[in-house]
Length: 193
Image 1 (cartoon, rainbow, N blue to C red):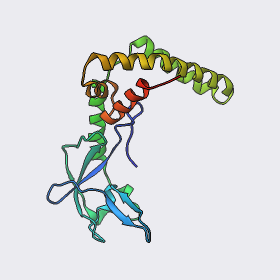
Image 2: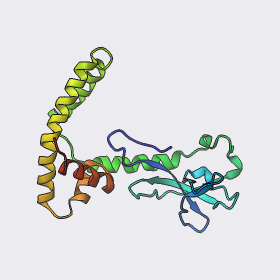
Image 3: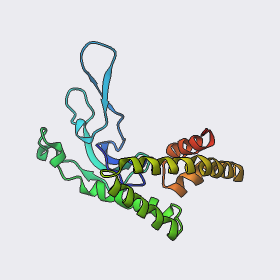
């Protein structure tokens, strides 16, 4: 389970590990018995060195976008309860990821203040109505989808015509990974209504 921040979900963070030689290991495969399926995990606590698994020597923050934290903290396996590895202190890795997300957020495009206020108010109002007037919420969501179907493709066409390498600019401006930015752009480019 990783760390996420609202509005920046594609930048999921987690504890990354390093082996003694400084390399980052790939996922650990678990054979669950007969069959061709192997469960894989890259959770930091699976790199114990037991059962032919790589042994993690240290940890750092990591992000789905490829960012890796600079601060590296040794792992003291003698202090980790295998039944409760989540109790081990990983705060340095999480703090570094939070700082990375602060940088991502600072580079993202700012909405005009009036639009930001309007959207926050709309979310709050829909939250208030969800239990008491769900039909009104569905109608409002339909109106929002209709607006997205008109303005999303317009913005996508404008962006793709403006410059050849739009994905990197879009990723930074929206605070997304390049994969998520490309997916969002394609969604609106080919949206039919």
